[in-house]
Structures are given as structure tokens and as C-alpha cells.
Length: 185
Ligand code: IMP
Image 1 (cartoon, protein in one colour):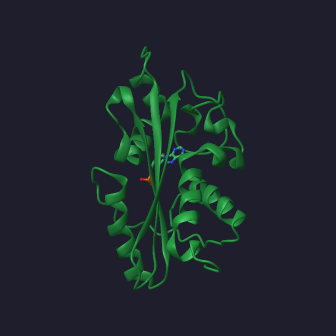
Image 2 (cartoon, rainbow, N blue to C red; image 1 turned 60 degrees about the vertical axis):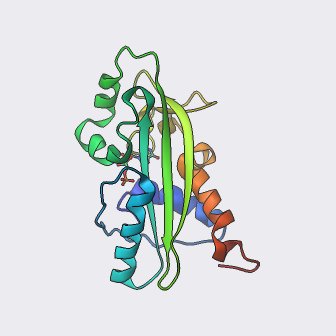
């Protein structure tokens, strides 16, 4: 579902709370660079199902910084590899407006079925400096709304309580037709 071990740890831990087990397919898939996470996911799901002929899940997420007009957004992965957290802090040097949000889309497709996507959004802000050693990606510079710790200062279950990914997974489990039917899975 993702080549990122951090994402898989968070998703599988939360899915396990609902009695669902995932297998980590570390297979990169062609990611179309589109204007939204949702429109990137469907071609990826179709590609993976046609290759593996089995149910697949994808996590596509990104950080959207208000003062940068939503950048890095759908370019979050590339911006992380090139600028990293340090570069993002430089872009915001001296900025008072540090509002940002993380978005996460969890997509699911089984052969012969329609795709299902659940989206989670976590509002927050970009910290003044990097804090914490946990997590991955932009975790050391993102403080979710109502908390003082960055994601990187939280344990996985604490991050899942408030994070974009945690919200998306809870929606996924509640709303996915097959899982929400009585006796479903
Ligand atoms: P993609 O979903 O693989 O396109 O990657 C999005 C990029 O956003 C990743 O490379 C991470 O750097 C970043 N990202 C996504 N989710 C998180 C998160 O929960 N914490 C920190 N960074 C994240």
C-alpha cells in the first residue's frame, strides 16, 4: 500500500484495533502529479489491482502550508526529498502566519469492485524549529491544533488520535460499504 514504513506502522496499528490485518506491499506505483490527492489515487489503485489481481490499499498524503499558498501539497514527497524540514523552516523564516494542514487519502480497490476513498484532514501549524525524534517526513515541524507537541514528539497511538491519517482510517472503517455492513469484512 505504500513504500513508507512510517505510514504503514500508523495504518496497520490503527487497523489492528478494528481486527483488520494488512500486508505491506512495498511496490512503487506510477503516481500521476495532479492537483489533488484523490485524483492521484484512482489510477494508482487500478494499476496495482491489474498487476496483483487482489485487493489493494494506497495512502496518499501531503502537507499544505497556508503562507505558501498550499505548497508543498501534492509535491510533498519531492519537497521533502529536496528541501526537507530545514528547507520548509527557511521558507517560513520570520513568518507569523504558520497555519498548515495535513491531508491523507486512503484508497481501496478490490478486483471487480468500485474504488473507495476516505479522506482525513488535520489542521495545525508549523513550529519555529524541529522538535522530536519519532515519526517520519515533516513530523518534527507539524503541531496539530489543540496540542503543543509536534507529531515527532508523539507515540504512534497518540499521533493516530489526532492525525490526518488516523482520521482517514477511522472514516474508512466506518464508511467503507463492505466493512460497515452487519457482519462485514
Ligand atoms: P506520498 O503520500 O507518498 O505522496 O508522500 C507525501 C509526503 O508527505 C511524504 O513523503 C512525507 O514526507 C509527507 N507526509 C505524509 N504524511 C506524513 C505524516 O504523517 N507525517 C509527516 N510527513 C508526512
